[in-house]
Figure 1 (spheres, chains in turn purple, green):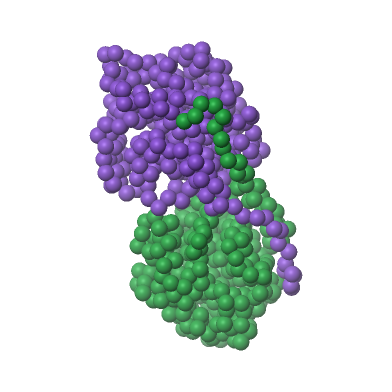
Figure 2 (cartoon, rainbow over the protein chains, first blue to last red):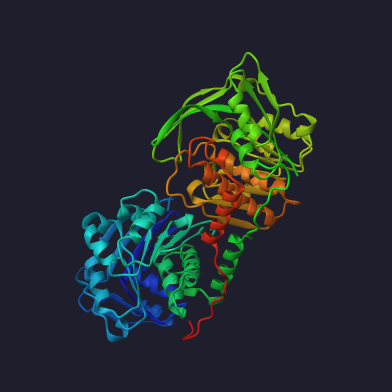
Length: 312
Length: 312
């Protein structure tokens, strides 16, 4: 199967307690497509300015990401985000946002991008997400969103949810979207919106959960002794999740569970270095090794207990 | 194998957003021994006053907990704790603590309690924990502690750690004890203190981790749609963990992993109602059912991925 992602392609300026970068490749569609590229062919749909150079294009090319649907605005500048993290890396502090060409982003999918089996709607205005979904013939569509849209246009977010198969969001977004503090109840409430086959909730260092109509699945995070830069972790998770599903013959409870683990593994690599730096030099062998480690870290046998001595 | 626990036996007054109780059975040794009683014979070592009545003794008796080593101070009152929880149940607000007879607690183990294979030192003054350990012939000893002792006498806590096999603490305690924000690094640092075979870190709604010399194991929490009263959850976890180990022929990585799951399961029951109310009417069938559910919630197959199409 094949996969299309629609979302931001950007330059990021990042500062963490461990160092800084003034201008590096970033954006949701970038992190997603590089992560997914280890599993599937990927079409990226986005928009950039004339400052997007050969070095940036080369990164996509090396990972065989099809960039034909990334529009280039010749007199424009690429979306720029500047952020800072303190030691508590769960919270990003935005220092500067320059939407630039992204402000006029009105995604038009080529036939090639329309006809992939899977589609991921990265975090953009919910109405645009819905428009893209309507252009696409994909059989499995997932979406992200963010607190900004839930605050300002929750109805539009819900409207878009109704036409997709899966949401991949973080725990705070799930709580806010469902207006419910308990994430398990929140997941169930979101499943009732209609149409959704799966709700994926990302909990950062605490793991992730998958709620489907008849099942529930939870995994811890891959244990990392340090997190260098969390930027793009969520999109890298989604890229591993959707990329793995795209590589499989069908989407079942079993393939979605393994997809959750691949999402976890890919995001664990992502946060080890700045931006895309770690993911771009990953090998399939490293990914499989970390999957095997993760299986080892989480495996236990079920042996029903029978009390031998005095009964209770 | 058999099991001894040394710790508080108490009356609690509890208030949560869901209700209140003025005087119910509580205390670390109580929660621990009731939980462990589903897996093993248990000796409880503690101290109570003359206000400890037939109803309280009957609870222990129904669960075949041996209370011969619970000292009764005829002119004293039982340890009393009054606490309150807000909607964020991770934090208990202490409203009143009356140590009463617990202030003079100087545990003396009978031969029966000395000669169990396993010993759990619930949260008491670290020097007392050490003294109990020295009285005991147990082959596997675990301890708990709390922020109060780490603040006021960290060296004594470390001293006690050196003579036990396992610590079972929460994430905040692990961070504070190791002076290290990352819990995986903290667990490794604690393992280096000397003598420890295992570090168990309880993370509440986020699950638990087990660090041993050559391995790491992590599980999510059992998914609960509501938490009614978290009092005693940690001791109930420890009771399930140690109780299960006590039921097994030997303590191995495999039995410890299953013990982690039983700890998780038992604490998930504990928080569903006030105090010991849920655990006292549990059945082995319910425990095994929840274990099976937990296995289903966390299981995935490892199938190494091989990218079929264009190589990366």
